[in-house]
Amino acid sequence: MKFRRMVACLALVLTACGTGAQERGDHITIGLALSTLDNPFFAEMREGAEQAAAELGVSLVVVNADNDVNIQFGQVRSLVVEGARAIVINPVDSRKAKETADVANAGLVPLVSVDRSIYDGRVVSEVASDNVQGGALAAIELGRAANGDVVHLTGTPGSSVTHDRGFGFEQGLNSGGITIVAKRAANFSRARAFEVMTELLNTNNNITGVFADNDEMALGAIKALGARAGKDVQVVGFDGTPEAVRALEAGVLTATIAQQPELLGRNAVEQAVKAARRQQIRQVVDVPVQVLKKGSVAGHPR
Image (cartoon, rainbow, N blue to C red; front, side, top):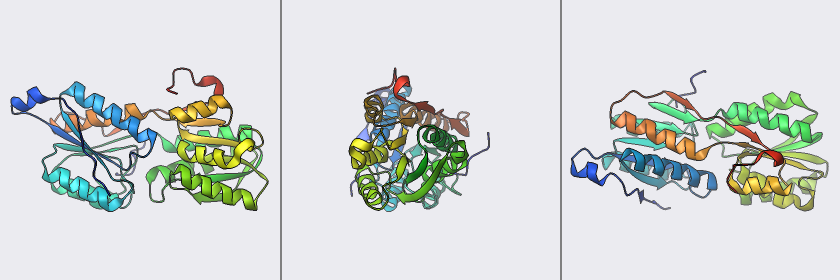
């Protein structure tokens, strides 16, 4: 597997675990710097991280950047100053996060990236899904279900997953008779996707498909489409959130490329704790994706 690119409110959630370790003088605190918690995907990631921290006997401090690069920089700097032994980061912007990574590196605090890469930044481990593969799978599914003009709703500019899912999607376009006629950023936001999709439908009535870089945007597009969703316009999302699973069952979402956010959070904390304890770690941890459709959602949370 090719090694991936090297990678306003401060919300603190302290996992109540590891008290005995603190009394013994070997207490470990791990930081978890998330890009946002205004998305079910990242809430599930936090849950997986908290479970791992509890099982490993460490404390976990969770900070939420609200999708602001500058806030995240300050949060990571505070975690370093306050003595975090390792930090897990889901960067807001993969390129601009290099400065944030440099702060952790300068403080000799091991940094683990989760879900998104840090371009040109040094991390000890990267825990992520293969977003290029996921984007290609999305193109295959949309190509099977639709024919003609399709829209690509992209995530936050500068995010590695926006780039990788888009690259994979474009690589997979030869799988069917679909053509991208509009590519618009909706910043992983359901509300923004609704606005963008409404604008596009007012100018092009021939749209037959939509690929959204995450399920939140897919759900926003579905709202804009109304009765057309799942009938004359097929929608494919990415993440496999519970609400997306319900949309699959309702027939308004054609497919979603499901990640495993709890496992991403769990694996990232496990690597961070190993780094804090100076144990052997894995430089890359790949968490598989899978295609979910209406008939294949058994066992997934709703």
